[in-house]
Length: 300
Image 1 (cartoon, rainbow, N blue to C red):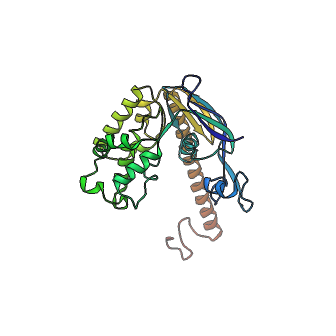
Image 2: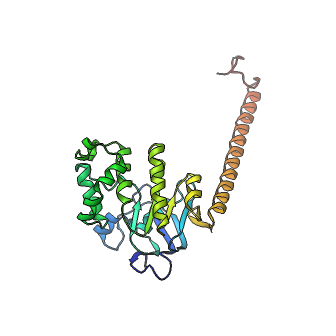
Image 3: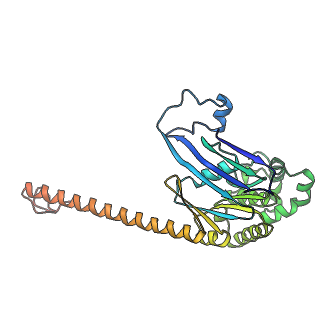
């Protein structure tokens, strides 16, 4: 049965174990097994769902040991973020299962958990409590969270709807990075903010990794992947193409990218040549010189 299981046993076995993971979407529709639809229809699929189906991920299996930092590599649309969401329990797999042994700190879509009608202060307490922090813990770390996020005092008690997207992301990172959960899931969040804030994010992640935390990182920034990761999962065409060290995974991805660009360029050149040949043939049939209009002048 497809599922995401959470347990507390960190001493034995991998902290993340995925077996035959697959997720199915419907073209031009929302995913058939979204959490909302599962609430409405239970474990049965919506009988009114229509449309062609495709599998952004299928038959993906891997393990992550405690203390590993794994980078997920692949081009856009290959299911990297979808995989993180299944590990986080946000999406339920249609095939296979994933077991996560330990609490997860999800650095994913950092703005998504905030209520725009609540203030920054209220959101810190709300989201912190949802992730298992006690009120006392939040009290003790509140100033540190606000300082890290670089939220000016006048905005602390202002509704979050008045925050810029950057402010929301900074606050989300500052809050989630305070969690003591042993597993971190990071999706492109290091791509935001100025250099000074990025440096703080890097330092925070390095501190967490120094404490033997486990991290799974999705990023298009190769320097970030090399900086943090000792291992790489290369997702290609919805499947796990390689499970190897990060350098080998990046090398394979870059080689495939170069080959794809060359193939696309060759196809464009062939298309242009066919168009020129068709124009030449049309001109010959009309008794014109190539590039001339019907009146003998230059074609527009």
